[in-house]
Amino acid sequence: MTIKEQKEIIITELQSISESPILEATELIIFATDLDRSKILYSQNEQLSSAEQRLIKKCVAKRKKGVPLQYILGEWEFYSLPFKVGKGVLIPRADSELLVDLVLEEVGCDEQKTLLDLCSGSGALGIAVAKNAPNLTVTLVEKSRKAFRYLKENISLNKSKAKAVRADIFKWKPKEPSDIVICNPPYITKDEMSKLQKEVKMEPTAALFGGKDGLKFYRYLSGNAPKFLKSGGKMYVEIGYKQASEVKALFESSGFEQVEVFKDLSGNDRVVSAALK
Ligand SMILES: C[S@@+](CC[C@H](N)C(=O)[O-])C[C@H]1O[C@@H](n2cnc3c(N)ncnc32)[C@H](O)[C@@H]1O
Image (tube, rainbow, N blue to C red):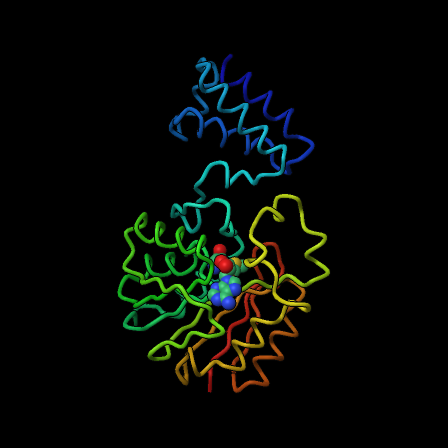
């Protein structure tokens, strides 16, 4: 079977369960063949080995059971960097790149600062910031044992100098507060949890569920900010697209100023930033 024929079969198989079957077919073929991404267009008439076809068949069967493509591939790109992902860790989302952009803009050339990435999961946010601001001292904090393994692996994979701490942010206290705190916490509400897409349900509940109203982590971070953040320092949190006004109000009533909301490329409220007085 040629690559072109195989691609058509995958597209047909995934059409009813995927929003992007063409992209998924291409990714699965690259995964199974190890072909260079830039050469795939010119290799459409190349024959696939039977081992490659068997591997693709297995992957398609997993996909049809709802396993996210990223877990099948075992690696996903965020901010043009590779991140190992799999069961037990949240897949980094392109929408979160906005938070990294905002932090890098804030840091500018003055990189002699400290940054804390709370609820760091795969480490996508903190590692992306650390790679692009190499003099920044970055610490990543994650509670889940499984996610922490991916975090450590991703720090090595990206040859980052960032430090990882396995801890529960509700109990942990850093020795010193940082200049910048970033956090993409679990923020899905109880009602939303039951309505999640099949693929998202395969991601860890601990990475998604933010308490009954989805605001548990924002309440704690805004209410206990001096523990993590220096006076005059800035906090950046990712939010659910309906949470801007509630999160903004939490920060405004907890000793923060310059509370701002930023939209992602789809036009949804995505990040709240605030400076501690
Ligand atoms: C929404 S995910 C974000 C992961 C990553 N920052 C990203 O943007 O891809 C939230 C992460 O918080 C972690 N987490 C949940 N409760 C925590 C807690 N109490 N302390 C530290 N981490 C926690 C979860 O295990 C999960 O990895």
